[in-house]
Image (cartoon, rainbow, N blue to C red):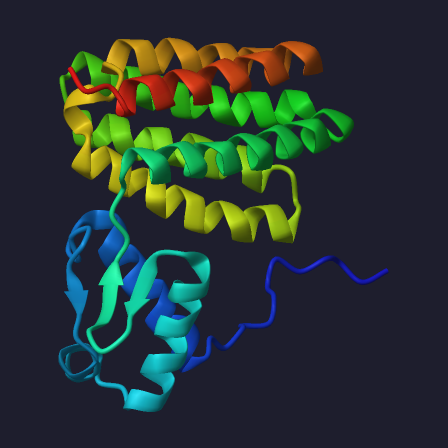
Length: 220
C-alpha cells in the first residue's frame, strides 16, 4: 500500500487572479481608500502587468462589488454607506449560517476547538489593547468558520464579504464593538460548536451579525 504523501501538485495562479487578489488585499487594508479612484495606468506599472490581464482582474472585483465603474470617470472603490453595511451583513449572515449548518453535519467539535484557539489570541490582543490584532483575529475566526464548511462556493463568497468587513473596521472603527465584547461573542459561538448545539450556533450568529449592524450604523 502506497503511503499518503503530504505533497500536492502546485497550482499556477493566472495573472488576472493575482491582480484581483492583490487589489482585493489593498482595498481591505485601506491602501485603496473607500471612494478612491483606481488608476489602471498606475496600477499596471506598479504590478508590472499589461493592461489586458489587469482589466480582467479588475472586472472580477467589479463583479464582486468591491469596485464600481462610473461612465466616463473610471473605477472607484466601494464606499461602506449604512445601506451597504446592512446589505453586506445580510449576505454574511446567510453565508455563515449555511456554513455552520454544514459544519454541524460534519465535525462541529473540531471546528469549535479551532475557533477557540483563535478566541484565545483575540483575548490576548484585547487584554494588551491591540485593536489591529483583535481585528485580525476577528477576520481569522470568520474565515476559519466558513472554511470548515469545506464548501468552495461559500468560501469564495466569504472572501469578498470579509474584504468588505475589513473596510467597515477601517472606516467605522469608533463604533465597532470593544475587544472584550468581541471576545465574548466569538467565544460563545465557538463553544456552541464544541457542544454540538446547532440551534445555539444559529441563534448566536444571527445576534452577532445584527449587533454588528447596529453598532456600525449608529450615528452617535
